[in-house]
Image (cartoon, rainbow, N blue to C red; front, side, top):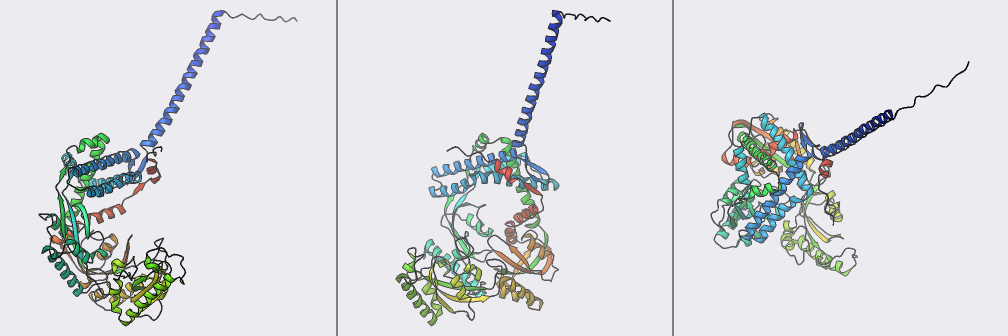
Length: 603
């Protein structure tokens, strides 16, 4: 069988052209898809980056989100306000209404807010707090109007009247080792303050002379002395004294002597009165740097907080509420860790090589400078052993006594446990005088014992007088609790043990309302049956910690007196806000916050 090859049909030129065209179309379509896909990918990357940089949640308050852009916007508003405020104070300085020194002081306080960490963390904190308050306001039907926002912008544009305030105060001086003044010592402080007041008024003493003679500077820092230029709102003094200061009619007038909540007797004068200043271009200047919407949102939050403050103060500071009449016993938790041991109180003088005028670190005790210092210390010890009451006169002899650290307290150290003497002063863990600590904690010493000279290589020869020794704070508060339970009247124990300013009155702290005290103290008071004594409460603070016991004398629904209301207004809203914050679910992304900081400028 023969097979024949089949002839292949030769394609025409037209079919070839059709295939080429179809192939080109497919290629173009595929390329188009690739381009579209690339654009989609780039768009997705861009959108993801943009979203991450702008809309990512950086904080939340009970589920309400705060974005990165919100923090940026508030930071911009705050910075614009700070910079405009500086311009306003610059104008006041240039017009001679404030001094260059006052300008530098005020601007120094403003510009500390302008570093990135502070600017962005402040903005974050503001927004989280505002979200929390807005939620509370919604739940309680509290709203603000556009007019209130506009009025607040006008208030923002106004620097309130400022006064340069000077304060003299006299503190009751307890007799060591007691830290609680007696009624006679309280009366003596009041009498002395009145004498200073009358002497300044009659020009028998200058203000500076009376200020130097007062002892208040060693007791209540920041509320006596030169308080510089300040507004009424910013002045951190008792409300009645603040009112008296801003009611003075003229420069150099004096307020009356008034007793503060801390037990000091104070009076004040003003050396300068700066009238209110209105910046008519305030909003225009802010809008040039920040969006009007962001600024109005910030102002709205201010108005809402003012409204909430009024509401809370109306309930607990000026309105009728359930209150309790309370006595207190307050015992300082001391320095160092809890349970660090019993405490001593001493007064010291220091006799240093070369009178402390040069560095003697590493100088051997056999050096003549140490020998001379020892001779001066031995002479002081001889005088003190003959008459320990001479300490005050010897301590004031700055030519002989080289102490620099404790001169402001007359050489008296606080109640310290041994660990504080042993602790390193450079790391703020103690005072770095271990040899002195070992000497004053030696067994067998009694009050008025003269100790030393003790060689402290970092200070010199130290001479001390023991004022007293007592158990550690936790033991003292436990002993107090036991004596009360055994029948000792609470008021008697308060007078003997308490370190609060009301101890002379048997610990009577008056009427207590909600939000007038920290939450733990309030709980202890309002959870104790009327007529009963509370559990011991420890409140630990950054600068001081205390043990408390309360006795509840009575409970009434009452309205505070005018003086009580004035004091409550300084406490209630802040305490309420702290409590609200503690019961709010707040989350913040600190790493995300740091990522918002602008890149540093190239050097």
